[in-house]
Length: 98
Image (tube, rainbow, N blue to C red; front, side, top):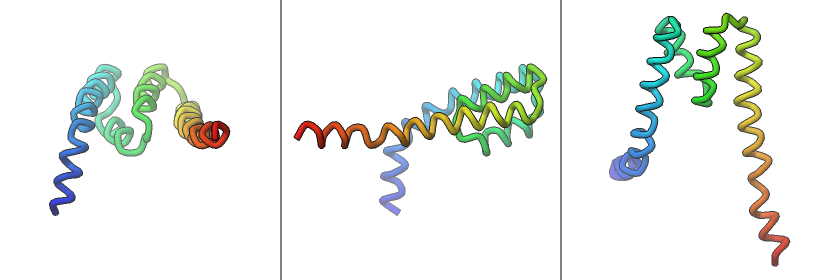
């Protein structure tokens, strides 16, 4: 139990950073006339926070569900893959300098 509270104490600043983003997303979703349950589902299932904002913009522009899916898949997949490709670079650089 002590370990749990130490983890909470360490990650609490991250939580404080997500609160304003959640409020901004909620305000944007309400102003775009998106139903509350769509906003809730986007908060649960969309991995990238920027994807939520993109989805609101696409819903507002009356994009089809397929277009929204493709855009979010590209956004989230591209970001994830770019991180995966960049991970070996520090090890590669370290092995070349020794």
